[in-house]
Image (cartoon, rainbow, N blue to C red; front, side):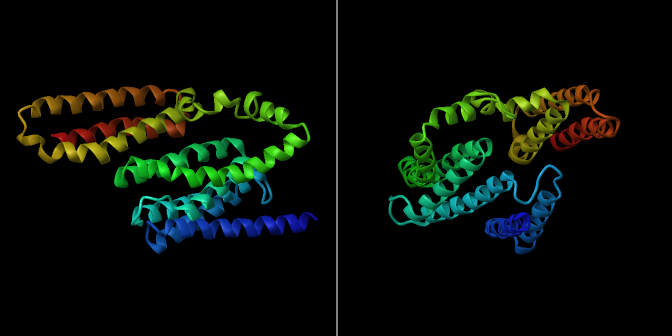
Length: 273
């Protein structure tokens, strides 16, 4: 019945909050992880385009579960005394990513690419490239189990070619496969407010990661005046770009863009000078 489906959806959403909390508390304090998990589920539940039994929830559930399993796999691989892959947690993370891929191909495709890539890079940077690549074996094996079962079932009924055509080739709400892959990067240039957010993100990365390293010893360097000019030029360039985006904004966001165009260069200039 409809009530039973809603109850199952609510239980799944509660489990989603628990998984998100268990994942976040491995890195952040208990209080922060709890607030983030509750906030995420409340925002997700209040989405008017979503319901408690919609397939988007399944993709989010399997994705968060896969993230937690991949984190545990990464921690186990870094603690391991041998160079063998972590099979148990690797199979589990691959299995969960495979279920996410089958639930929603756009989100699942991103998970299929991101999770093994990040695991391989993280382990490889500490334990060596061979150790990082070996972690992909259990992931691939786990991912193949649910995907092979579904694709085999479709093949037995002669529906596999139509499935591939519908999922990967024909245009859908997100586009075909060649449109989905670069969508994250191209979307930032198609809408002004996304471009504005991308510029802010780039600036924050520069200020948080690179600027402190630059300021650590720049005053004793002979090219310190050049660095001041470079910082000033960067600030002016950012102000011009944000000003261009501000012209396309609604009135409320326009003020945010204008003040951002003024404050960010000032902050960068104050740090350099």
